[in-house]
Amino acid sequence: MADITVTAANVVPAVGYSAETNYLAGATITRGQTVYLSTANTWLLADADASALAAGSTAVGISLSDVVATQPMLVMQSGVLGFGAVLTKGKIYCVSATAGGIAPYADLGTTANVTILGIASSTSNLTMRQWASSITIP
Image (cartoon, rainbow, N blue to C red; front, side):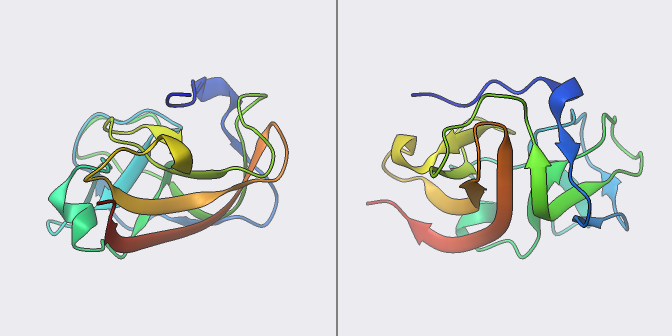
């Protein structure tokens, strides 16, 4: 299995989600892509092979905005996020090795930095409990 196919229009948070709004985009970002907060205090696309995630970035989430650099954006960090029927219930999903991508944990390759986004509570919903572990797969 590879990265999930995200359709931006299907990315919808459930009631009671937690999101960060205090920072700007540092690049062009599409709703449903994974992001991390850079040392420049801008959101950038997350990548399991990036050194920023190896260092254990304290803020990782999924974009709820379609933005270009320097625009304010909304990033979901916890709660239930709908994706449409592209998930497998019970699987753990992580930041993938593709910038902005989401992959099942089992699909991460060697040298990937494990950043858990959450567990699929159904085929459509990801229950987010993000954790940038600072652990690299040997």
